Length: 99
Image (cartoon, rainbow, N blue to C red; front, top):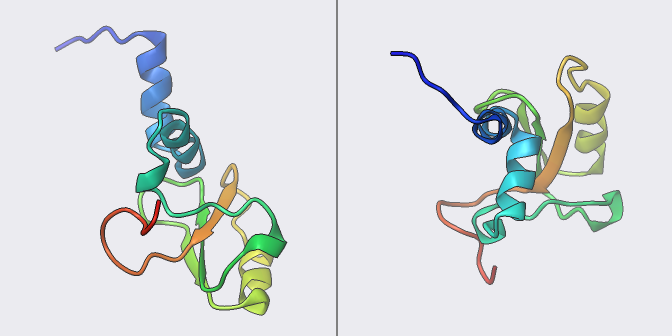
């Protein structure tokens, strides 16, 4: 069945296939409470943390327990991915506390 999708719909679908773009989409649409905190600077990172490549699904997700592990993960970062984000580690299901 042929489908016609608007340019905006195609862009949104693309956002959902890229973790970094998906996070930006969620934040831009008021859904930040449903996301783990994203760290914008190395000094603000609380360990453990998650490093997520832009790849879709759970591929490219690593947990760093400390700065040394984070350095190793970033040094071995797969260059084929467009980017990565560093977020608080998840401890359970649901939105973050106090968010």
